Amino acid sequence: MTAKPTALQELPADLDRYRLPKHVAVIMDGNGRWAKRQGLPRIMGHRRGVDVLKDLLRCCKDWGVPALTAYAFSTENWGRPLEEVDFLMMLFERVLRRELQEMMQENVQIQFVGNLSALPQSLQDEIERSVNDTKQNRGIQFTVATNYGGRQEILQACQAIASAVQQGKLQPEEIDEELFSRHLYTAHVGDPDLLIRTSGEMRLSNFLLWQMAYAEMYITEALWPDFDRAEFHRALCAYQQRDRRFGKV
Ligand code: IPE
Ligand code: IPE
Ligand code: MG
Image (cartoon, rainbow, N blue to C red; front, top):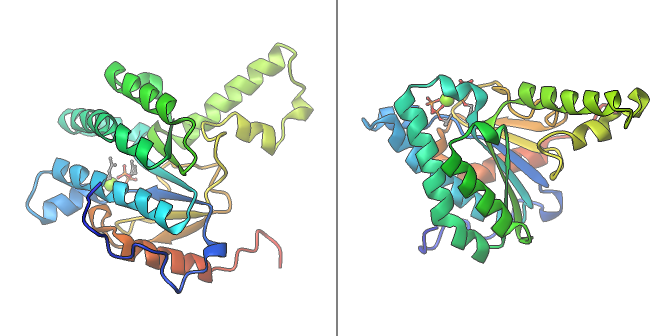
């Protein structure tokens, strides 16, 4: 992370620190379009996107948001050109290696959700190392969705539950929302209170389908590489103006 002082270091005065979301999820979209607008190859957008995510993580820590989940690679993203997929895998691995020491200093606990077994082995090793090394850290819970698909996550939970039933370890009537949630990749963290998607797209793209049942959604036209603290501030202001009724009156 950069040493230079960042604007909006402290929680802006117009935000109520007691009503901040406990968990923010982000669909980091628009890297390719950002790069194209600058006349750069798409991968430059991804590279810049990493810096933006780093500052958002630090901002969550500075402002008192205890959990951040970021969508880094979907199960559908394998359909992109091979060079881009390869670049992303290499980037994830390099960033994890480079940032581990700083995550320790910053007391970040990193976790991953998704079908990790399909990732390159060297990336899986780096993931395992960062998860293990940071597991005692309590500063902020940072979850990265990599080769993640919401439907696939629900299916693997169904399979695990069905096999527990088949083995007689579980009765069908015991399957409730709480038990189901415990079988999802996200068992370690609560459901997101706020979902932010950049680049103006109004869809979930298979992200946290179960967990997002009552998340507030905030969509900004800003492209991910331009999503700065001022943008996050706007998202949190919008969130604090929402009336979260959860079906009640
Ligand atoms: C999001 O930016 C990053 C990933 C999906 C890995 P995109 O790469 O989707 O950028 P656009 O949507 O093409 O602009
Ligand atoms: C969603 O972005 C996935 C990630 C941000 C990792 P996409 O760019 O892949 O989504 P679509 O294709 O526009 O739905
Ligand atoms: Mg996109």
